[in-house]
Length: 246
Image 1: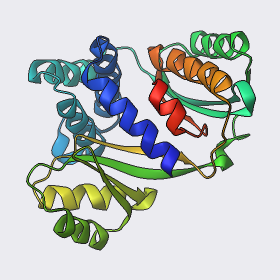
Image 2: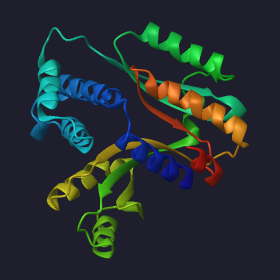
Image 3: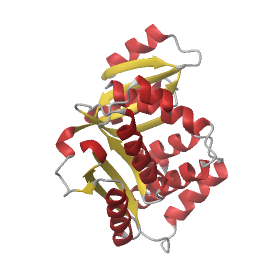
């Protein structure tokens, strides 16, 4: 899990100074819109919307933006989105799993195939790589005034499989089935995570030399910049040398 943890840390640090914050906002707006269409505009009765709003607050999205996204999802004339996944191999045989939310599947498929082809990779068939990843709940929580030992005990009792403290942030990992109960536990403790999502964690990671690893990172960044792609997962080992470069 170390590769995942390191990549999460880098993304968090990057996000704090990211000039493309609007990209992050647009992905969250899309998640809020889909959540509202799926379960209604009331976060009390819509767990997916509640999580999306929490994530929006975690990246300091203004309340007005959040409300507009909820209103957009409630509007019957708003375009419907389709959620789909893509799987393929990047340079050096690195497995890449993409989660997409799109209003035009043909456009998204064409873009994804183009990214893979132009960067020495190839798009695979659905289901061909999913076995390489486990779905886990990942919660990023600012330490603040929380006592690490006491908080760890609370998380273990709530079903946490793993917990790490790095740079004043707790990263709590749960089984996919425990995601909802962990959210409820945090609500009971009056703790709002900065981010709470179901992630795909690689069962094993693969080490590449620095030059090939840089090519994979560039492809990952291209996917993350695409408005139709909500999440990117991979099994590249984030070595200390690669972390230093990033």
